[in-house]
Length: 430
Image 1 (spheres, helix red, strand yellow):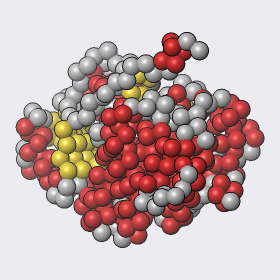
Image 2: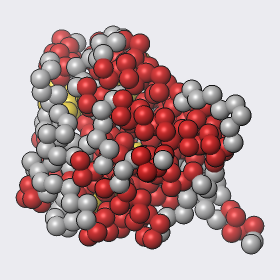
Image 3: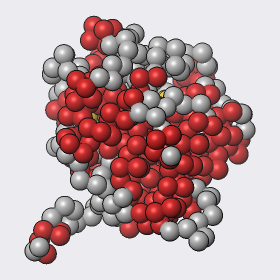
């Protein structure tokens, strides 16, 4: 083998920037003053509405108290759609806004990042920017991202994820756009805002964090500056997710998950992801299910798939999870990490297979409810051979797949997807 062949996958590593951040209880009360310092005058707030809470109302009124004009777009959907982005772009332009604030989880932040890119390119369709640094104008409107969940870390990363429902309406496509120009101007993480996050949603977001942390640690990018954050985020997730899930007003648990999700995102920001995310994107594309739930179901299967390529890295993950690995081989320690991940999934009450996900499986489930006729017809996850094949093909085209530790082909990924659909987790640890 030639040296060139050894270097071919990722010969040059790139460190991507983070935004300034304000973190801790009460941080959201600084939005008005910080917006003024950044020169905001008329702001478009992008959010899902966070119905059932007064979070959006309180933040908007606080901004108005500080003299800001505010226009609200509150129709962002889970797995934000291309039309969510473009509707917000139209509202921004018609109202002559000069800035953005996103309030919510990854969906609100991602839709807002996409809208900023589109605004900076004279309203071009956001789907044109799928891929890596596809934007041509590095300057776009300033953006404060206010998180109300501990999951995606979108407020600090260079990635945003959009579902394309228009290019081929019969085959929705969920894609990742990585773009340094999309990085927010200011991230605000306040664990008090997480108190109203539902139990099941908290758990699912927590597994998004575990996926964000574990994938860059084992990624074939092998980016050293990401590894410390990755392991520490794993440690913090295991230590705090149960408390944050089952006692939503447990401040140490909520604050622990706030930091875990933030540093996990900083790990993958330059360290890459893998097919946990690729599978999740595919399931979301076809069924509009929650990203964190999808990650939770896929994670044990992908760990089992990848660990045979590098047991030592998964042994390190076991240590980060608090497992006493003294006297264990790397192989045994890897399996102990897998068992601990499965136990955590069960402890926080997440479904174990995709075919177990139904309309009443979790509080924010959109399965079979829209937003298009396509999704209205997708009322149950089929899990049959045809379904597994289309999910697998979507995985192979996903931007996260090249970073996966083990080489991915249709033949190798199909069984991973199939097991995620219908397999028994006990088979992985038996």
